[in-house]
Image 1 (cartoon, rainbow, N blue to C red):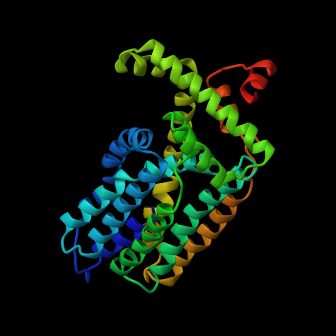
Image 2: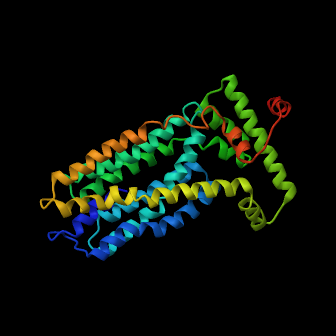
Image 3: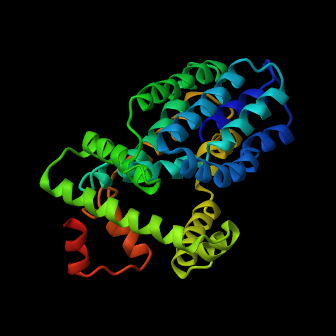
Length: 318
């Protein structure tokens, strides 16, 4: 999010190794949205097919590939390629929320969600701060490191218990669930309900044997899906329309440059101060959630408007 501001100021500079025009700068800032759209549609099916662990590794390999492309860039074309590669992974920011919910305890889910939001602002702050003493190429080389760390750490993860249950791999699901959550009585009950509910879903699918397109159409036309889609769309559009991403990551330095002749520590310091306030804003009030203390199966039942009686729940546990 922050890298374009550093990159664009560099290519517009008279002393730049790779010189670009105002049109180049505009397109560099926006072109990742093209492949971002592709990423939104492609990454979710990949995650459902191959699992959360494999998808997370793949996403960070692509992120690292984008930074490597920037590191060896010698032309405007190569910079565009790097931005387009990174655009594919833009949707992964939202996919991370799914992994957080499946890999963390319900009581801690809100804290991990807050850390995710906080880390976005922290990354923007670090990028602009490093720009005070590093070139955009040095920043891109350094940025490879977090992606590599994530790839290594993810390699040692088990697969998500929810994904394994969804695929009917119940023994693997148990091992993964115990590895993540332990085997207390409370967690044993949660695992039992998870496996029982997914077993019911698998049996229903076998009975229906419906065409894939029909199943997709039915899923997309359900009221709970449409309500969620409309809500998410309105929230996203309102956030984007406010100009917060464009203002803080790209245009703010250019705005200040019009009023301050000597572009250096002063305008950049405004950015950094603003981002420090952004860190506080993202960190506070994010630890509470409507899903706090609710299991994933409970949330899934609520979204799907499935009402289970105490008797049905007790049968699952039995």
